[in-house]
Each structure stands twice: as C-alpha cells, then as structure tokens.
Image (tube, rainbow, N blue to C red; front, side, top):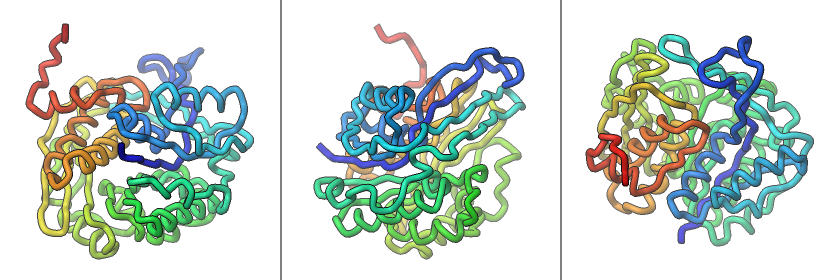
Length: 345
C-alpha cells in the first residue's frame, strides 16, 4: 500500500449554524480541519496509507483534533505533541451574492511556533511514496517555512514524489516576508504543482491574460495554458502543473473543472454545475487528494486522474465540514455520468 505523508496544521473550525452571520449567533458548530489534514483524511478514506505530520499541543482540544484524524484512519504517529494551543478559524457561510468570510486565530499555535530540526524527516520518508505540503504552512511563520523547506529537501533526497497546493492566503503572511521571498525555493523541489490564478499571481507574478473570475460563469481552461507553461519553465522539476477552474456565479452556484499540463499535452476535465452548495471549504483540498489518488491509481492516464480529482471535489461541495467523506466508488459513479443523486438501497 502506498504511503502518503502530508504536513501542516489541523485547526478547530467554529461556524454559526446555517447561514447566520457572526453577529447573529449564540452558538458555533464545531469541526476540525485544515488544508493539509483535509488531504490526509481524503486519502485515508480512499484506502491509502495516509500519514499526517504536525505539531499539536497536549491540551483537551488538541487531543480532540488528533482523535478526529484517528477516527478517519489517518496515521498520527509522527505528530509532535508540543506547543501552547491549537489554531482556530471562524467561518461565516455565505449564500447567493454574499460570500463566505474566514477569521483566523492561529498566532502562537503549535504549527506557528514549529522550528527547523524538530522533525526527523529522513526517518519519516525512508519508506514513503509521496509528500504533500501547501502554501498555507510557510505563510504562518519563518520557522514553519524553514521546517517545510527541510521536509521538501529530505523528500527529494529520499526519492519521494513531492506535491504542493500553492494556496495563497493573504490574511496569513504577517511575519515580514512576502510569498515571493519564500515560495520559489520551496516550489522548486516539487514534482506536481497545483494552483489557481490568484496563487500564480501572488506567489510568482504570473497571470493568465483576459481572465477575470469575478465575472462568474464557466472558465476557459485553455486561457491558463500560458501560466502553466511559465510555471513549468520556472520550476523544471515539475512534471505536471494543474489548476482548478472555479466559475463563481454566486456563493451558492459555482461551475467547477480543472486542467493538467504535462509539458506536452493540456488535459481538460468535464465542467460540473454545482448548485445549492452545502460547503465549499475544502474544495481545493479534495481536488488535490483526488489528484494524488488518481495519479497513483491510474498511472499513465493523466486524463482519468484529472477527471477523478474534479469529480471528487465536486462531491465535496455537498458535504458539511472541511474534509471530503466520499468513497472511490462514489467518485467513479459520478465520473461515469451518474449525477442523479438517487437513493442507494
């Protein structure tokens, strides 16, 4: 069984029930999640040997986060039980023309205060097949960025495939460094790069001409080919560069697809109309997990791997919470064209 390692932070998510605003609520729904832990949960759900590496305090709330991972069959043996607190984020869920809103409370969390040298990456990677990180981790602190670079360099040395979801988060880059100061060196060690138009622009100054996602509707995948080519030229180690294509008609109705470029061919996935979105948080994470699973399971068939990733993340939009709790069979059913939603009995 393939061993997949993800590195990042799992957080406590607090959301007003339904579509209430922060100022309206007297209670919060509790969910545990985060960009990298969401990928780990999806991969475990697909039957892969999923390991999550992080730094989580030995508090009652920290223990709840670890228990959530264990419940989903994620291996937690390499989590450092250290730090002052678990990071928190507050989510106000939008609807129709009102977008969702996120407020972070992550200062001094276990991952924000991690340092280089705390984790024995060579030990972790000696029998690993894949390592995944995101641009969220190096946005937390210089120590987190250093630990991430240390992990990537160890993975490269140990022959482990490295993937990243660039995941630009403007609210997190607060420690005196810009993404352009940090991200190029980290991304240079990656074999698979996922990013949308904002990620490419904010991290590397790249932007597809004539694309404005705020106008809604379907997004033309071919318009991103120039950026994908530039990314591959900038980072020659990358064998595949991918972008998700989200057309935001409203907070409740999105179009969803993706494209993959392998240096020769641009693969385009079908476009899904996602109406009456239940929860769009974790959509990109579910895409990344689906892509990793697809590239490992449908080796040599990039089109099928891309189609799996898009179908998996389409289904995530129907599930409350951060993580994508669907099976391979459910994803492949949607890939086959069955979007009826009929009761299975």
